[in-house]
Image (cartoon, rainbow, N blue to C red; front, side, top):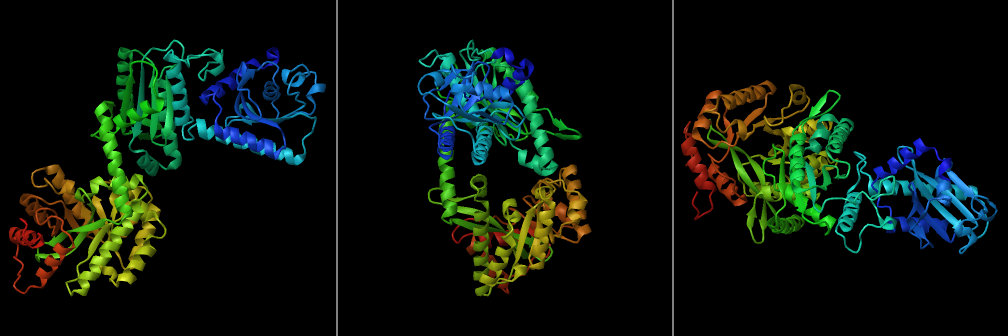
Length: 638
């Protein structure tokens, strides 16, 4: 049969099959279930999903068949692949000269009918077949043809999902770990040493490419920290192109016997089979490579990467465990601005396990509504009065006490709990506002920072309006803070949300200004009432001309748009006086007071009602002492 093949076209087809990195010899339940469904719908005793390489037919899924592999020469599936037909039909094999001597026909089980739909991958190459056999001659009805073609399409989708990453076309995590495990087993010389009948990493000539590998393997895990930002900045389509360029760069770096995969949208994996010296050199070159920009047409981007590696001195062991170790090592990076390679050490496992347990506890605490707001005052240094508070998320941990946001915000984000957390925070703030109002305390507005996920949600503004009515809180007592860096991610949606808030009477504050590099057009399109200068451009302004110049620029932006400017993070008297000299009058930071709970806010608000309290005109030090003393818990040191 081989002499009838179109050799160039067959070489391309085999290359495409290898591109999937499919574990050919290993049947999988999902494919077995699909084969069983085919048998049931088509009322046939035998059915299967076969992948056809240059010498073998591999049964990836099967029903009623014990075979895992058979020679390609003379096989039904080989003829089906070479036919280039969408459907390949053999109504009576005993009367077909191509198959009358086939062992399945001439001997038990005495197959008579073979019907197959070819499996065509996304790039147009035939990978194999979805087929059924019957022990009596038969022809396909129109309905059976539709069923067979539909099931074949599902089989192709399953292959793509199991073995290919849709963003880059690289092997998936499943293909990577399965093939790495095969290589580890075969290279270890154990009971699963390489045999052609069960080898999953063979080249087009049938030789296992795991043979001749070194006795050491380095497994790597690459985390791209800024993929989401790249997509939001350049758009989903161009972001995908840049990710594909990154994958192509990695593919050019690896050697032919190395393994490379895309684990998910922001993680890649590799396995290097090399001696220690060569491996270290390869990793050094990778580190340099990852520091370079990636370009697509006129767009240029630096992917922020951290790389973890795990070494195995002798082949053997568990592929998934090695990949998990490498992933754990990647989390050890502390400088997000630098690409770095970190090697897994046993101590990392204890740290990782402790972190996983902490994540579980934090997620449970969020679900159990243990979130509490703390508040930091915003003061007017001209009048000596509190003009607002910013609500800061805190959590009561059963063992650790009050936990700050750094410990749980990332956990909430990864667990998909950000909107739940934000809505709990809003409800708690509304409850505190209602309590202060019922006690007759002065009305001072509170600003709440909402995550991007919550702002993008279509029901968020409706929920805020409902809370306003439920707690009978005037809309002017609430401000919603939008982080400036989010302006580039979904400008039209943010503009719409800001307009909806304004119509509801709720103020909008632009938080962390100066960190997101917004242009004036983006600011002009967004309604906001308050601009908050990030602490990076307040702290040190009195001694650093560059920082001072940026704060001067931000002050001008606030004046241009008629917005109140609040300087965040003021800690030093020298910075405070420098900013006051610039014309700034609203400040928030530790110089005046740290965050406090709802009781501390009550004490501050009560102090505003005390006729004995007279604002010290221009005496910011006296104002700071008063606020620190008043907000502190009774008996504590301010």
